Amino acid sequence: MFLINRERLNAKSFFQDQDRHNHFKVSPKQFRQTITLLGVDISDAELCSIVKTYGNKLGDIEYLPFLQDCACLKYVINDPYSGSKSTYIPYDIDFRGSSDVAALMQKIRDQVKRGRIRLGEFFQDHDPLRKGTIEATKFRTTMYAQKLQLTKEEYQKLEDYYRDKDPLMIRYFDFNEDIEGIFTSKDLEKDPRKTLSTYCAPSILDPKEVLTKDEEAELMALMQRVGTDVRHRRLLIKPFFQDKDKSHSGFVSNTRFRSIFDNQKLWITDREYYLINKRFAAKAANEINYVEFDHVMRLFSGDRDV
Image (cartoon, rainbow, N blue to C red; front, side, top):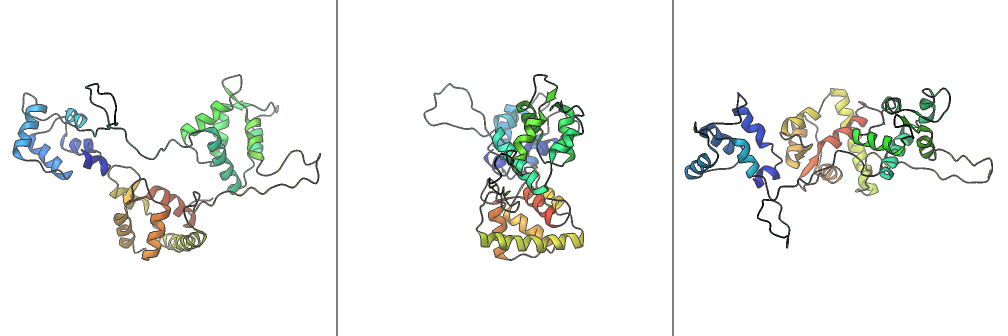
């Protein structure tokens, strides 16, 4: 099923629409209709072969074993042959967040710098004796309250790194010391002539620096113009993208993206369309990450703060 994986389709959901009683089986006619809907044409002889292989005593087709056997295979050159079938390994965007603590801390520093947040003051509200540790639940609650956008895996990784000898306590003081370095240095009294370097958080518009300065300025003007239009018309553009994203992957094709803009009368030029493609490109060359686009657009439309 190369087509299913290329288009990021959830084939099981199509069969479940026909399987009203959740018996994980469909009639041959329903099976053929579903396969045709997925863009795969099968002949009568092929349908008969599928019925013989995956059919039960009543003549219905059990689609779960069929989908399992149709999973795309991943072959490795010169891999030792064992006679067993390999499995498909999806290559997709990792939504679990930063892979290591250093990258996670850099992400937190960027958000703290943009929002000018002094986390230490909020942590001390939960530590009246100034022991430098607080409960893990209060640590996460404080981070949530400051609207630091981290995934559950990132919060867990952060807590494991700063966990105290008591497994229920987190060393918030050490964590805050690692963050506060972006604002000031603690040894200024010993060295008054010390020059502090200014910490610059990356631009939210182009954090990975895939655009040139001129292109970023053009994209900034575009996002401001479209964001103002979205705010005045009170549009919610993300649901329109989600309607076309049947597999809930967070991506839509380039042509689908622009057609939604045209339907909502958000007019953009070919040059602006090129900049959006370049900045918000997904893993595939012909797809756009609309989740990230909507996240940035909400900043320009006034639906969220930095």
